[in-house]
Each structure stands twice: as structure tokens, then as C-alpha cells.
Amino acid sequence: MEPIPESGLYYPNKIARIILEALEDVMGKNGLNAILNLAHLSHLINNPPPDNLDKAFDFAYVSAINLALEEMYGPRGGRGLALRAGRAAFAEGLRNFGALAGVGDLAFKVLPLQAKLRIGLPAMAKIFSQMSDQTTTVEEKDHEFVYTIHRCPVCWGRTGTTDKPVCFMAVGLLQEGLKWVSGGSEFRVNESKCIAKGDDVCEFIIQKEPIG
Image 1 (cartoon, helix red, strand yellow):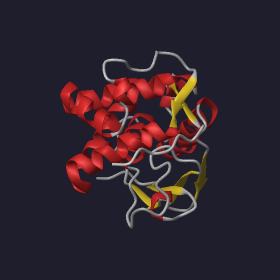
Image 2 (image 1 turned 90 degrees about the vertical axis):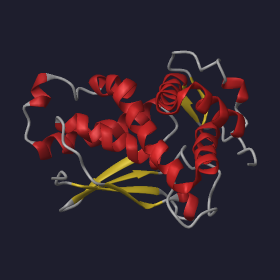
Image 3 (image 1 turned 180 degrees about the vertical axis):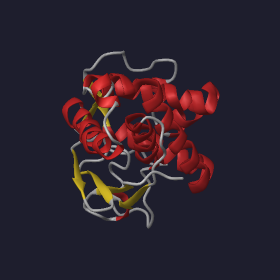
């Protein structure tokens, strides 16, 4: 695969580190190293970003890892791994950011489900907008929430290169985030627009009613 040109837009090192640890959990060390080699990121092998909040992990690196998953495992296999890695990334590290946003405290836990979603989703969006160069907005409709990433690291530099959405890492992260915010429910999350397929934003439709 061709390298993806650097964007000059960044994730904090800590979030990148969480993503890499989640991938290693899902794929094993050798699997992760193979992906990093394919993504032209061999400098990260046994050398993860430092555990700090400096904005230093280029969006292009996130996108290259996502593309390498697709190339190595095919669209279906890559999708499954990206979903699992996104979920693991939230479960293992990003929930601590959620606690910062006040989503973990007792007053929040006793709210009705829809109120939790109404507060929790914008809180998740805000964490990314504040801590990284990813800009995210949330809009509430009658039966769903629309979670929109305006500058998306997961498909950075791939505009118009595919006919299907590719940001499954973001889908997995949202699924696990919603599970945590809601106190254990699963929700349908569907990427309806994707910059990689030529749309102007990456848009995720979240059904208000949990599955089952």
C-alpha cells in the first residue's frame, strides 16, 4: 500500500497508545507488527507513543493502520478486527476520559436511559474535539442521534477511494461507549456517510432504542 501523506492534524499520544494496545490485544504482537510494517509505521514497533496528552500522533497514521487492516485481512476480516479494536480501545482506556466528562458519577448512573444518551454522546464528542484535532458534533432526531465527525482520522487521505464506509474503528468505539454510558445496553451504530467514499463528513446514525 502507498503511504498516506501526513495531515498536520493530531490525536494525543495517549489515545494512539490505547488504540495500539487494543489492536495488540485483538491480534497479538506479531499481528500488530505486521500491520505496522504494512502501514509504513515500523518506527512504532516496540516503540509506542508516550503515555501523555501531547498532540503528536498524525491522523495519517490512524488511517494507515485502518487501511492496512483492510489490505491484510480483506474488507470483511479488516472490518471485524477494526470493530473489535475500537471497542477494546474504549473499554481499556477511553472510559477514563468519560469519567473526566462526568459520565461516570453516581448522579449520572441513576438517570433514565434517554437522558444518559442525551448527555453521554455529546460528552464523548467533546472529549475528541477538545483533546484532538478531530471535530465532532451530535444532533438529536426523533428516533436516532446523528454523530458527525467533520475531520476524521480513521479515513484521512482516502477521499473517494471506496464505495463503502470504512470507519469501523469509530463504529466499535461508539458501540462500546454507548454500552458504558447506558449501563450495559447494546445499540445499532451505522456509518451512513464516509469521507472515504466521497461524502463531506463521516456520519454515524445511532438508534435511540437499544437492541433486544
